[in-house]
Length: 282
Length: 266
Ligand SMILES: Nc1ncnc2c1ncn2[C@@H]1O[C@H](COP(=O)(O)OP(=O)(O)OP(=O)(O)O)[C@@H](O)[C@H]1O
Ligand SMILES: [Mg+2]
Image (cartoon, rainbow over the protein chains, first blue to last red):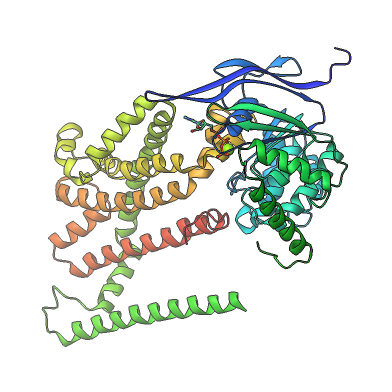
């Protein structure tokens, strides 16, 4: 018990799907430890089982072999100690207002006894994600970025131990994405919640995570775990940022160094233009 | 700016449509007064309305209307309950889902009125047979829409619900039903229209054999005695009730639910 700050332990996890005759090893022999309060990033090619891993942790899927343990208790199904934020914009309940979505979460989980308290807490979390004043709008009246903010607020409102995020900013434009990255770091520091964050974007992984877990596909396996000790706030300009970037880029199977540098330059260019607000809608 | 413009446009449309209907009514009145057709078969609109007024005040039409509404309420109510139970079981068990889909495919094309002869043999010629026909006519649009609606709810909303610890009946009640509501409303609208059609048609087949009946029977009986203004009066009441229910019930609900939630396709 003492000195055991392991929040989540994944032991020898396999997940196999069968599509008719075909056998898909979505995940094979995954072993991971996540410490309380850590910010973990998972990156890998499409189809390497990132979503499947999150869904096993969330309890939506059962592992074929092995187990996921939360504070030494094996996970058997979904629960509010692990809240998921999805990529797609339809995760909010359209029949509730922004405030109603959070109040509903607090109500069905029986977190809070009185309606008045529920409202106050919901407002607190909306303020945390920068949406104070938008309480009475319905989800269809929000932009994509605002919807993701509400989804984050709703997930946090039930005070999960772990926030599972499956490419939550994947459908957003570059500007909104980088704003939300900054705010997520602030929220993470404020709430001290453990975050496991899946992304396709190398830059995003480096900006956010303490640890970056690089996956490979067919079968889905952990290729390498990279400790990211860059000081925050992290800027793609920094030299050591580039080193990690190139390392991940290589791990993901892009071998051509020329191309790597070219892409890095492009990203740098985007970064500059973004700062100058020349690309507001990219 | 934009909102007022939109409002103006829709007001123009309403005005346009109102004028058109008034025009048709005036045309009817003029044609009837010109007496190109026998007055007995083509009464003037004014005489129809005068007749309707006296019918409403001291005639039987009010009672007939209430009786029709009672039959439709009973048939539709039963259909809603049956549809809810069926669609829910189909949701829980894939085997039942297959059965329901087979039933829908086979029985949906059968007009409700076609089962009336056999229903009369089984249940006799009383109101119970009409209720049965209404039930049979309205149940398929209800089940079809409910079935489609429950499956239209995005998987992520279901998972967000499960993440909050919802399962079984609670998941259906809090996530699936509101998510399926656009389809449920459509189903109710179609079912209501079908129920009216079925009730009127069934009562006309009964003709004068039953001692009591609703508006369908009223129209049929009035034609039998050649009281043609009352025949038209019966039709007008059916139209008015249809309009009233659409405007006061369905639209009222729609504006406060799926339109507010942005769940309509328009
Ligand atoms: N329900 C399922 N049935 C069958 N195969 C599945 C199922 N879910 C996932 N898979 C397969 O498992 C593998 C991993 O899928 P997963 O969605 O976890 O990948 P991912 O890393 O999240 O990909 P992406 O980056 O494109 O989101 C894929 O080959 C996919 O086809
Ligand atoms: Mg995925």
